[in-house]
Amino acid sequence: MVVATVGASALTGAVGLVVAAAVAGATGWWLMGRGVRGRSEMARGEALVRAMSIVTAELSVGAPIAQACACAGAEILADDPSSAVGRDLAILAARVHLGGGIETTRAGTARPIAALWSTSARFGLPLGDLLAASRADLVARHRFAAHTKAGLAGPRATARVLAVLPVFGLLLGQAIGADPVRVLLDRGPGSVLLVVGTVLAAAGVAWSEYIVDRVLS
Image 1 (tube, helix red, strand yellow):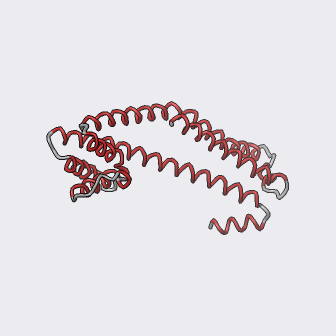
Image 2: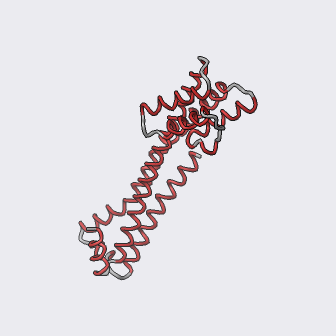
Image 3: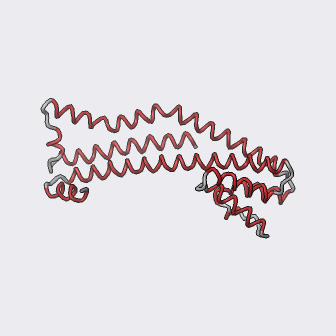
């Protein structure tokens, strides 16, 4: 259906419509991907904070570090079998239990815990204290990010509304008989204006997202 529509548009000379639709579709896909990645990162962060809490609790009752990490990984996987943090933490604990080293580069999403574990083993520092301090830092960072995102929700929504506002202008123009759609679908300057306008709207959305990322970083 999509291929047929694109082919028909190209045959009728509406190349600008094809390009504009591609730009708009790519922008929408990019925004969806950002949303999915953001939710995944948030879930990983929450799982990491929970893992640190569990490992700290296990260490406080005298459990060996490998066993504490294994318990944390098992508990997280029990609630979310697809959790990368739980899987990587369980693998890390199993590797150390079998005599392997604490390789932070192979710890995946559990790398922060592996790094603290390695630091504790190297310098003789209590791992429980290191985990507690790191957990407090992560919680503070997540809280700041959540508050900042909430504060920027309005400006971000405004930027997206402004990006699609020209569409309502086109509808209004059609309603009063100006027929802007015919002009934009023409092979002449109208087609160029359609592409330029769509690119500028997409650039505005991308720039607003870039500003949000800079604030959160």
